[in-house]
Structure formats: C-alpha cells, structure tokens
Image (cartoon, rainbow, N blue to C red; front, side, top):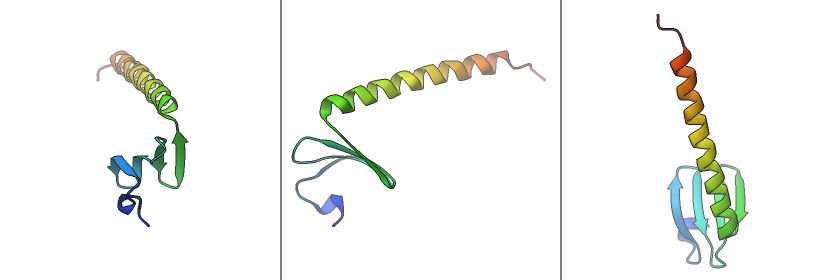
Length: 72
C-alpha cells in the first residue's frame, strides 16, 4: 500500500522518491529513495538544525572560494 493511501500517515513533504511522513505515533519518517530514517520530533528538529547550519557554512565556503578565483 502506498503511504499516501494509508489513513494513519500524513505526508508533510513529497518530492518524487523522497518524502517526510508523520505516522500516528508522531514519528517522522524521512524516505530518501531506498533509505528510511525514523526520528522522533526532537531528533528531526536536531537533524534539520544541523543540516541548516551545514548548508549555511557550505554556501559561505563556496562564496569565499568563488571570490578568490582569478578573473580571466
């Protein structure tokens, strides 16, 4: 049965083969292709915060690297 057809599951985000689904127990299931991570709401918040910090640092690093490249 597809998760979208199951009444006890609530899809919070869906992008092709990736999805974030909340079950009747309140757990968040991150489906990333063949991999599924099951997290409590607190664990999900920690993961999202960590990913946000990593994204900001990566963006800053990329911007610095781009600014240091010689102009041709």
